[in-house]
Length: 284
Image 1 (spheres, helix red, strand yellow):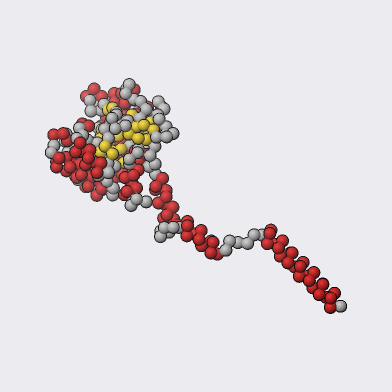
Image 2 (tube, helix red, strand yellow):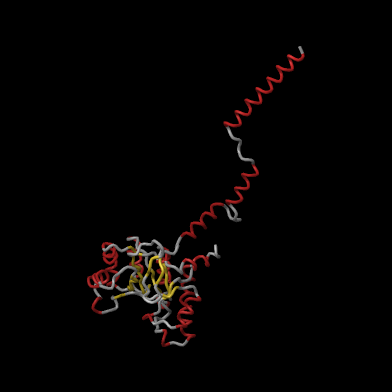
């Protein structure tokens, strides 16, 4: 009798164990708490909250280099598989008369550009506010010297003052230093290039421009030549100025370039600028 009860009890225990194994196989156990905590530590390796860490990652993806600037022609050349049929828009002598109007026109057309600033145009609160608004609209600010002097006629100390004083003022107004430098008349010196580069700026001239020539000081003339010149080609670096006729023609110029198949380059995708941005963020 005892042997029969023992056998029945053993059979019952084996059956229970088998059912338990089947439930475990069909419904895997949740990861152990320790492993879950380890994954969270990897995902938030920074001391910052998770949301802030994601924002930093997004910022680092902005301005990935797509184009290099030819140091001899100052035209843009694609890196890897970037679109070769592009042009860069630049506007000098801002903010003189119509720079804000030009920025608003470009913003409405989703057209990026660099606004190169002269220091003597931002020496009043009104003009400082204009520059701040241009920057807040999303446009890159460049350095075009304090007084628009020919740097080749100045001493090294005078050149230093012409360049760095503008960068200092721009930083006070918009919260960051310019990322590009353009010498008036394209008259760079070895010393001015050195100062600009040490201050984190990419030295830039241009491919072509016409609005400073008397023949093209009308809306119709400047709009036509900027789009139809034989100098227009892939990577062209277009020079324009804060002028009445150029401001009036700006929309026509942008639309004309696009009709010819050109895309307008975001200045922050030019090689050499993205590293400057990372340095300002503390090397993140």
